[in-house]
Length: 65
Image (cartoon, rainbow, N blue to C red; front, side):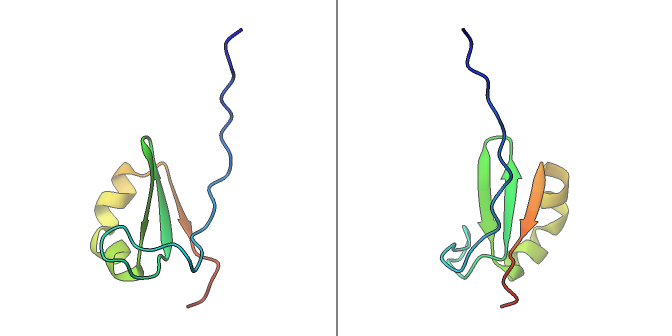
């Protein structure tokens, strides 16, 4: 029998998640076909156009900070 893959909802970044570019607190999680990346607000804005064209989904932090 072939196992069935189920997709779960992406989890918003938490205070413990760190930007994959600079190590600052992550504000968004970018879901890509090969995995997830997290970015701080600065890098999310810097890469906004690329993120929007490549991402399957973008999940923002629930935290206002």
